[in-house]
Length: 151
Image (cartoon, rainbow, N blue to C red):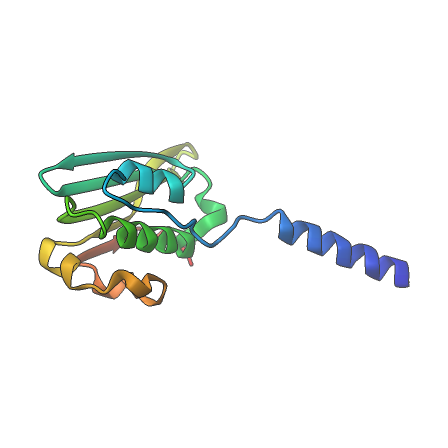
């Protein structure tokens, strides 16, 4: 019985060690850092970055959303906003997350599940230094999520 307990304990530890890391990576931001550099260091999903005169739109396709769920998207988004706030060129950023959702016929297609936008004034007013304590849902200029997105 004792052996079984130790085997189960070892198995549990191995499973937890193989799990998804929930803490976003630290990014070194300097004058040569781009928005793409920051996003690429934080998310491992497919993404695109569009920039035009301070307006930045980041589109992320999270194909394993069932594992990361809303909380991971929120953590990654908040970290991205905090890091790009250090770039003088960014004025009004937005992040759009898409994930595969099953349609009525059972086929999956990429669908927007989370959208977070800051206008220039709101983005400047946020103290991003303690980004992990911010409630992005309440401070964003515009925040929407799909009903299919769960915590």
